[in-house]
Amino acid sequence: MNSSTLAVDVSRLIAELDFVRHSPPEDEAARKALYEAIRGLSFSLETPGLSFQRIAYAVSLYLFTDCPFDVNQPMQLHMAQLANDIKLFDILVEQKDAPTTTSELAKHTKTNETFLGRILRYMASYSMVTEVSEDLWSASNVTRALNLPGLKAGISYIHDVNVPYIQAMTKVFAETNYVNPDDTVTTVFQRGHNTDLKYFDWLAEHPSHHKNFNLWMTAFHESQKSFLDVLPFDEMIGSHSKVDTPIFVDVAGGLGHQATAVRQKYPGLPGRIVLQDLAKVIAQAPPTEGLEIMEYDIWTEQTLKGTRPFMMIPYLFLISCALLGYSGAKLIPQTGARAYYFRNIFHDYPDPKCVTILSNTMAAMDEQSVILIDEVILPNKGVHWYAAQMDITMMLVLGALERTKKQWEALLEMARLKIEKTWTYGDELGNSILVCVKKWEDENSLK
Ligand SMILES: C[S@@+](CC[C@H](N)C(=O)[O-])C[C@H]1O[C@@H](n2cnc3c(N)ncnc32)[C@H](O)[C@@H]1O
Image (cartoon, rainbow, N blue to C red; front, top):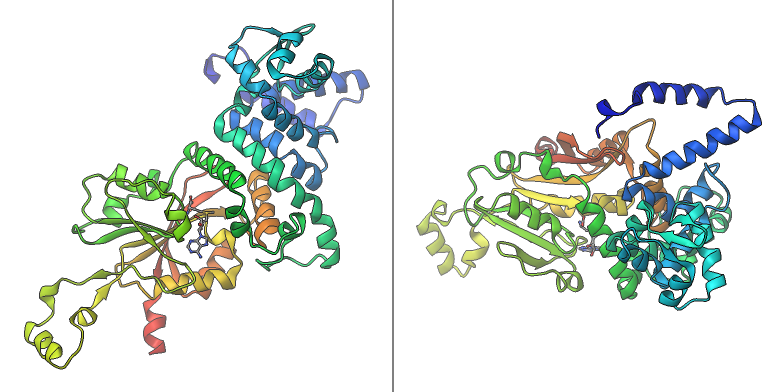
């Protein structure tokens, strides 16, 4: 059923609810009835992603806002993890819509019936399961959402990894006099986990958390639009490419989802598509036809450059150089790749570190090269709660940040890059693709 066939006029209903928001009923019974109706409505309107956000991030919402529903929200995350541990959601989802008794569920989950009855009662009050009638339960839309493999992994990751450092936050900020953190080595994360390791190094040492993180991130990105939905890659980046032209370098590309997506969208486009990351990460990347995999450390100068056609080098000049003992390979001028692509890299670092990464890339660029930055751009005003939550997560884990439009402009100016074009393709988060070119005029004036 779409909105035009609904019995209610949705726009009118929204306007009426907006009116109530500004003039809530004074009558206590009416206020309570309205509250319960809206609370139930909001649960039933949830997509799997929204159910996940409400439950998994209840801890952070509780700490950072005036708590929209009630102060026991953090318990939902722990209850969802408990359901994961005893495989309760698996069992309810397997039953399809057939209601199951408490005693049957206790048998399947190997738990005590009285204990499980109390847990189920709590879960039903948050729509995490449906209470069909007394002692009879079935899966709700929220049960099914939380049982999706990516979201289940996300619940475990947030329960095990995020909760300890969020607990440490207020103490750390009081001790550091409430300054904006920009230290990537000693952040709230290190205190919460009692470690000296940087976040990504710590994650690599905790394979089960790392696996949950990757499963969750993969599911998250699969449900989102991509930069390829808005950027005409073949015309803008790939035009007149040859088989040996590096057309797309996915720098710090993890397991290579984006590089693979480019190859799949443009199977006939000539040119090299390359995934770069640290050795231990690329070791886990699945081999993909038409994708080169290469070790590269972003703190060193970019090594991937194209090569100008051999015929352009005067033959006699090369022979003379060879006779004088110069290496022919060194004398063939190199070109940059067409596009160096970075997704979710710069939001991991404060500005000076980003400038280092960008400078290392710019050293390899030529006039045809661009840097593609695939990141969130926050509006200068009126940031969505989802994006604000992500920004705080970056602050606590990495001493880093999501950037506003103004902050991106300032950072790229610092790096001597010019934004040639920007497309925004994400709704709440404001995911965008920035096409950046080198400010050659600045470089030439420095010579
Ligand atoms: C937030 S993930 C983003 C991965 C990928 N770009 C994506 O969007 O799915 C950050 C990536 O940076 C990589 N990374 C961290 N330090 C690095 C380094 N020094 N050199 C290269 N890659 C690095 C990590 O291995 C990880 O794959």
